[in-house]
Image (cartoon, rainbow, N blue to C red; front, side, top):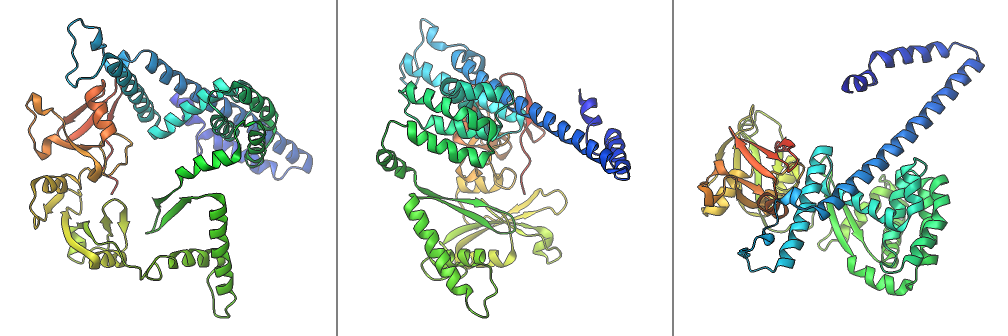
Length: 444
């Protein structure tokens, strides 16, 4: 199987031959060239069809595994202890509560196994399972079109999201929605379909828009996403009226500034700068920073002035030296971590502030800046320090037996059949279905 995939890879012999064919075709008359292009379009359509079917099948199997984990949790969490005559829960939970918790952990374990195998985020796996279930139950016609390669994935996702927002106890609107959107889902491009499907959803929804808006306002918030080159994306979910008003103010101010003769910034840059100026204290560059304890990893050669490697800001990643200097000016304390320029192994940790738990975290942070479960990006500062070999089984409280685990994956290690192993300093995980995966290397 892998050999056939390699044969089809760009740069393979097959691709070289096809490239040569296209080069020869360029010298043929217009009829031959048109025929060649027509064949390419047909091949493209066929490839797209097969890709749609494959994606839909992935959604179906993911949802099936999640359903089976709910129905047969023992595969993922072991035998049900509540079936033992002398069973008594050490935490005082009832039988119903324990069985419910076992199902929850089983689903988590199954989702984690699929995420690791597919190299996907666990939230992505859960979302695909939820979308598949929603389509299967609420939009069977769209679901059939998706499985048949007729409905593209973006349209299926949009249909699932909108169908899920319909009343959960009213099958009538589900059927109406499914019947009205299946045609547009098959023939419209994603942007057009989303507009059409939203309008249809409004028509079949039994609850007033006012009531839905009042409930949706509770989900408002602001999120920060790190980007490249010392940048970040600020995202805000606001009531539509407020968002449009804010955008209008930013645009009006930007256009006013753009009218100046010596203004060289684009409207997009001006809108961003105006938004930054809304922060109390003036522009973003001059705004006061929150006082903090700054953790910076410094390569040894950079410390000696022989390298230009950037500093690593805890919780973000590489930052430029100017920004690091600004952060340093407002920090109440620093933690200096020296690393080997070749292996990146920690050489020394500053111990100016002595508190055993914090000191231990500082020692572990450079080696494991995030949760050690594969694919998890939660900062180690927000994780539990887990004993790889449990304390109750003789595991010491030492750097060689500790690793950061976020609370969900910590529970997974102790309450499911997932296992964490350590050999010669390397951590590896074995899933309940036997898949072995090494912990991810440090990102920086």
